[in-house]
Image (cartoon, rainbow, N blue to C red):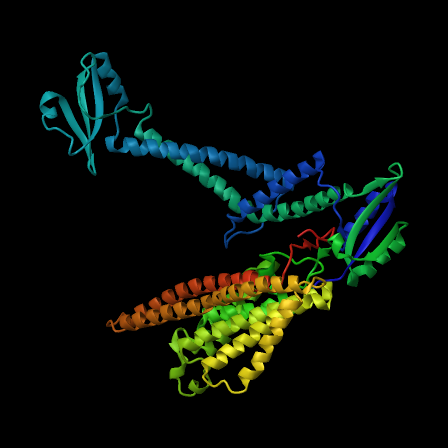
Length: 596
């Protein structure tokens, strides 16, 4: 559900403004109305500091190891960050130098060590030693007859050779010439070792200070965030009466209003309070029970509803759970998801991570139920177990297909009924009659169609025909309340076109549930069959069987889980939200003093 909001307008004397803001920030319940996006120099400077500390925390997290311990330091957060930044710049310089040295060493290694003094003495006698590289296929043996040529090395298909000749008589050989660098190979390797040692020392510095830095930077980040929030809030007041009075507006949930009133009673601030109106675009705060609250993560990936809308989370949560379980379709996979969620929860204590893992565990429970409904555990058919066989509802792929379409019809009709309720509540009962007629028509038509396919029409067909006629009347004559009958009828024809094309298209989208369920099940069966074939190998067969089962089903869980997460989300945001008339985005409730 969407929390009811109250709007407060505060009239504050300019001398009390900062103290009142500090009190509001400490209270942490009022969403301040923003009147300007202007940023002062101080705000921009604080924002840059926040970004710098955020980047530093992200960087230092890479150096946390199981052996990391907190190190005592006398440095302040800024001093330690400056030390880390300095080390970072040095590391970049050394890394670049290491790459250059590695390239030079790789180029010089095939030539081995050269006596650079001898090289210079040859020049004193008018001689020059030219170095060449060419492929084996291009090397001409006659060169060895024409020149004082010596092959130095052969690496792969490349030949490295030297030619001694007079300086005044250049060597005419069709090969790539190589010029010796000014530094010998041994010196380059020594320099590279020193650079690598320096890089190692910097990494050690990072590892030794990682936990300490993250703790200091996190505290500083909180301080700067509250400072930024406070400074930004000071700009939102509107100055009146020659800047003597400042008007500030804010929103607070009704259930928390008493806390604000206690604060106001202790101050001399004049205020006005009124119930939220949709046209004022109040912030949206969702409040749901434990089960539904875990699915708010899914809704947040799309958008929040407008304040005067319905919170769709309680309505799509059960469907999403069923759809996920349908796509995964294996009870064994559900058990693994619950266990993995439990294990990872023990390691990561972040509230956001814990909440997401709880959702994974709930989806795992749904997968267990739907896996049993379809009779699959690690791709083994539960119908082959005698005492379970009678309790497996779905017996074949045809029933899986029909079940997917049935779930689609139920969700679409639920969306339509929600749309009817919203229209009647927001605009009046008469404005929801046409949408209700569409729902009655579609449901009646679906029942009539399934009855005919069952070849036993009986009386059901007679009753559904009444529903079809009633729905048509409601569609054709109540779609434009207040307009004449001819306009209603003409618009009704357009609505009927949308019903047949839109409803059919929406319904066919639910076939993806069937496709994902069957494809994941087939892949699981193939994994089991191959694993059983490996098990026949003498001695090591059972080991290969176990490894193949673990690896194969792990891959299938990942692929099935990805599809099971994304495609039900698509059905929710497109088919369900569209049929329910969802509208957004709403403004997120962000209380002053509770930066997340």
